[in-house]
Length: 434
Image (cartoon, rainbow, N blue to C red; front, side):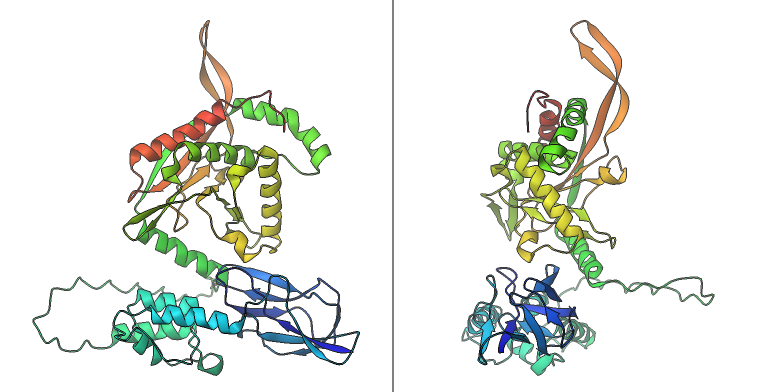
């Protein structure tokens, strides 16, 4: 028998650690190759980790709730073979831990402007999340060293740094050497929810994903001044074409032909016409993105929302977009997405019409600068212009809601962009094939 170490795999370019949520197997259980062994959470996604070897789970080295660096062993799997111990490193697994640690130490070194010699001597490991919070709260490298850690080996966890920030804010400020400058009024603490004594109310703890969504949505509103423009589009030709094609497409491809990839194709075309929608903000600089990567908001069975990204959407035809949309949506609902499939988006669409909503005012996915909500397709009486005059006809119409960051996207650009998307939808070629 051979004892093989199963290590924490690398689940994305920026992921250097993961939190063990649940072990799906117990010690002594037989494991098949590619069978999921545990669930791991990163700052991007919760995902199942499969074993690349068949055997028996001999020992669990990391417990649920532990934060483990990429490349560190988490379990021992006993397989057929010799008696030596080897390290099992999945195809996408583990950059060397030393390299990962060096990256984090570099981030700490560059984090504080008041570190006069430009370096920091520390044996502590800080996660990117902790470093980001410290940077946002102007906590210097030396001060970060004093934060007590409750994690493994004294590591500072998210809870530790947030607790320290609260204590730091409530501590009395030292007397200023000079006359103090006028300070902005402190934000009033939120009024606590009154406690129900009747027992009629149900208190539901937010799960990890809901907390993450809440934090990011609030942050987006604080970062970007949102403006929303609306356009109503006549998509009668698209509805007719899809009705003609969907049965044969299903038989040929084995999957459904939905409206979403058709709408996405129009968005991609409009981005090519107006590339300044496909930008991001970095301080006082505008970063014009070279690739068009479309995020697609997907509602999960849990009620949460996740946004997988179709990379290089401008390089795909309608068939390719359809296959990618169906694949990502299916794997999102089955919790099978990889962390890298949730990053790198440059523009996002949200199909609120799938819930019967006619329009919405979506919140921008940072650091993007725009997002579009696709409303429900509804039959309406409308004026139809013909060479023989105008008449009233039944048409299929939908609203496009375009929210954009007014720091860098003005009303003219935001309005022209959504109008161009509508134009592409209305000019859809009913003779095309897929």
